Image (cartoon, rainbow, N blue to C red; front, side, top):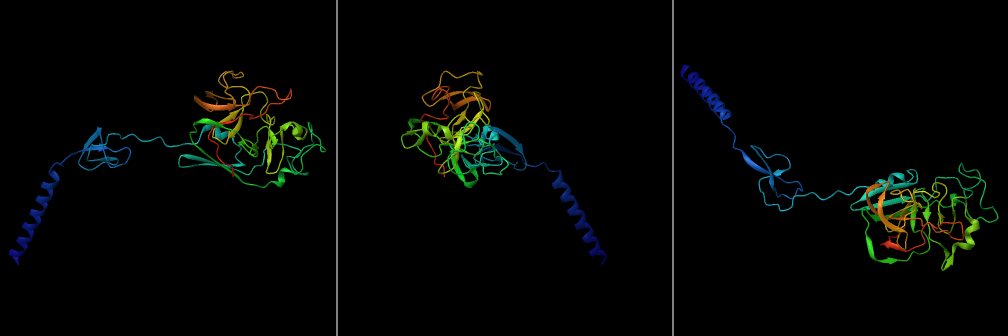
Length: 289
């Protein structure tokens, strides 16, 4: 028994000695290389030595381009869009814009008793288009690239919505029908240049509910470019370098780096009106569904 006890004692002491010896040994360091784009290949210019593999680092250094692509983000201008009407979100490299089509301001086109209903001023009940805003409980969706680009050729607009206003409602062009100018419909427009139509309440002219001869954001056209009021934020005055569609590149209150955008052109129609978008799309139009 005594010999057995001695054996176990010696064995126990041996194991302690081996453990201590192992703990006293220095670890074997390895050079690890940064893998920022997470493709399994490391950047030879960014490394660190460590016994264990650090997060975000790999053992090889054969990546010729370890840069991380820009992550798409929503444009700052979308913060101006009415939060009650819109649902705006990213879908990969696209922006999905959904709206109920209902404006967030007063109009005689709301039904009697609605909180936003007012008496007509620049129009009259006799001249108003048929139907109330409340009748259009619709859903409209526009999907555009997060970074739209100019097309090699312009595209003519058509009837129906050509963009979304920040109020929640639609933007239309300068026609009231196929080849029919807006002239005959002018008496039906409310104080903010909107009226009801076959598909929705919509604007043809400068929307005075929130913009009158200024640089306010009007909305987004279906090719993905934003449209502003008659004045340019970069100068505080009317831009003089607009193309045929009222577009140019300059800084805005939403992009200090500068970008292409449209303006309501400072050219009076019928002596007193300013059409929101009388030109062609300079980008590639996307369907409003």
